[in-house]
Image (tube, rainbow, N blue to C red; front, side, top):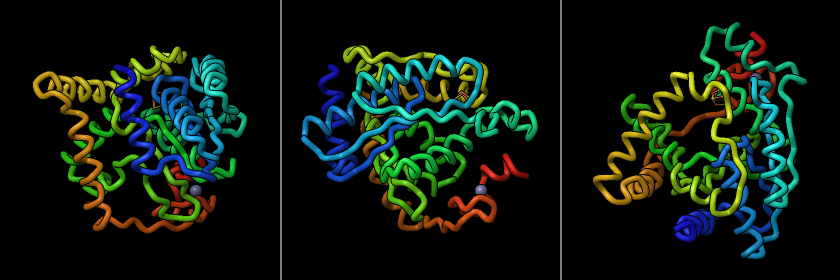
Length: 277
Ligand code: SF4
Ligand code: ZN
């Protein structure tokens, strides 16, 4: 079974050009199963196909309670894959996600999302990487897809495929090797390959309304799958093709944030609005 999923990931990497000669790839590691699986299989694919590229892992320690043990886990995952791990400690740079959440009266997961997106892009660039790999999997994208469809945010769908381009010189190309495998598949891959991971990467994953709603969406997806074989995989393939149509009509203009110089579509980026205003 795991061979089928592994081949599916390898086909995604090959067909979408996720790993190419000369690449410097930064893999965002959280300590959970998805990012570890993405790292392990990107490295395995590069070695198997003798691709001349460099793969590094990056862990953001956001200072949230319980995150300390994630550093050790990420070290074990990076060692297993045979790559160097870089750890960025947000608190030592004056960024406190929980404090910001209280100060700005925003859910901690929403603050965390803004901080992670901003720092991962910036740090991957500072590590001289041309691609940033994340562990978002097929189920995550299908949930985003339905949510954006229902709220008529069609332009977000333009980003739903295994590789996105770089719309600004400071935005690193994103690659998603797990675009065609979901939670169930990555769990099996981690177990069969002896990849250590944490099931509850964050204390907020149980209490957050955002995460609870996502769990409900997962349940809906899997109930469709019980009625229609390969429902998720077939839908993910359609979404990846559909994103091309939306891409043509949804062109986002990027400029540099007037406070930090990072790319944004507004005058001041989301990160600076959170941390500097
Ligand atoms: Fe961030 Fe996820 Fe924790 Fe929410 S559950 S605070 S998004 S790591
Ligand atoms: Zn900014």
